[in-house]
Image 1: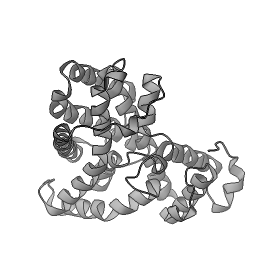
Image 2: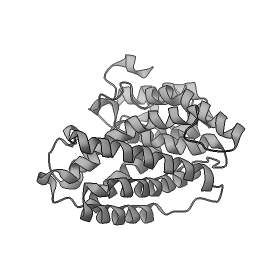
Image 3: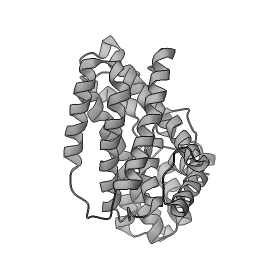
Length: 284
């Protein structure tokens, strides 16, 4: 895989140099590093964290905790986020994540149903501030749901079989669910997770977020990585989604400045040039 290709060769699309550089950073954030890779870095070990799995009973616990966490996060996103100026509290959120991870680590996997909704809500606050910094209006249901969408971004396409085609393909897959949910909220002025439009979106996000949650839970359970504290795992978990959020909302900002089609074409060009996409057909 190659990196840091010069940007001038990409100027034919009409984006400014600053916006091309921002997009290149966004592509790296969204396509390059998986949560498993980040965990391996935290452990300072060459281990295949991506292959970690939970026993069926614990997997059921993780799945239920994921659904609960996303529902809680969705309600918070739509009920309490506002258009106040963004605050630079990224480090505060990481410290809170470390605290909840440390508390959960002391109890073990049994704490997941209680700890995950808390850590997910903390992450959502951080994601919302990143969104605001990139010009999102948090009074709009679509912006709030875009924050929730970050939890579906998960693993880069090159390191996961969840979805081929990377970030753009996943955005396209979720687009109708996000649009339908935003329309439902705008019409009803309420976030009801049992409504079909909301349930479909939560289910689609939970399927992908659950992969990372399972890796996180399994990491705590494997003795060989006992040197990683629950706090360190939660910090890696939070940093992973903060990085994804930065890339996601840079792309959305550029879509507002230019056009989605133009930005997506340039995104695909950068992804291929950097070696994140080996098959050009995955750009769709």
